[in-house]
Every structure is written in structure tokens, then in C-alpha cells.
Image 1 (cartoon, one colour):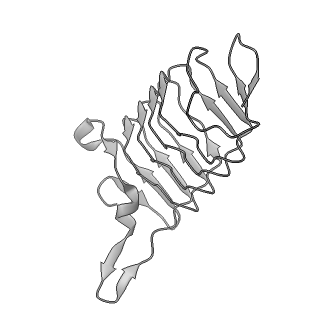
Image 2 (cartoon, rainbow, N blue to C red):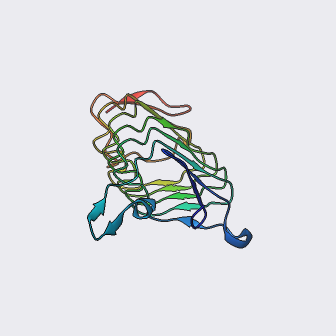
Length: 171
């Protein structure tokens, strides 16, 4: 147990906030780099990330380039996903964004090449520039808020955009 984190070989659980107050998940990868006199120890190879209730924000570049990360469990309390939070997580495919999420910042999922579909909750009011750029396998982008803009978020050619009460569109 280190600073609110419970770690096992390839998994990490972010515990509830310190002293009962919600905290921000900030640059987790930094916990897994350690420099010694012999040189740098390789990064921790995270496969599963569980973020417990009480966490409201995932900070910029929180687990960027965690190349073995396949699954994330988000809390219902999550409000924001920071810029480049999951950028370069090339194995990431199991993502269920919680209802209550309000904002996804620039480049949040950029380069997550294994994601095939994404459901954006109705509570999301803004998606940042290129949030889904280079998500080459993304085939279905379902936006439960029919008024949410998908301009400049980086959806790949051929991706189908599905919104309630609207015609299916193809990028």
C-alpha cells in the first residue's frame, strides 16, 4: 500500500480519497519508475486499473503509455478525464465510461489503437480536441447526448456515429 494505491503484480486499485475527500489521480506511471545507482528500473506493467468511488478527476497523462493496460474500472463519481490521460495505451479495449462524467480533455484516448467502440454518457458536455485521434480500430462511437459535438475529436474514417434521435453518420 503506497500513497492510496494497492498494487499487485499487474493490477492497481486507487483507493477512496484521503481523509474522506475525493482526490485526483495524477501521473500514476511516475510511481512505477525508480532510479537506482544501477540505472532505471523499467516501468510497472499495468494491465488492470480499478479506480474506487470518491475519485472525481483523472489528471493529465495519468497512465499514458501503459502499453499493457487492457481494462479500466471507473467510479460513478468520476467527472473529468484529463488531457492525454490514457494516451498511447495500445492494449486498452475495455472502457465503460460512467454516467456522471462531464468532460473528456484533449488527447485523452489518443493512440488507443485497440478500442473498437465507445459509449459517451449523456452527462458529457465537452470532448477535447483529438481526444480519440489515432484510435484506428474505433468503429462505433455512441453519444448518448445528442447535442454533443464530435468536431475535431479525431475519429477515424469509417467510424459510425450513433446518437439518439439522429441519423447514423459515418466519418
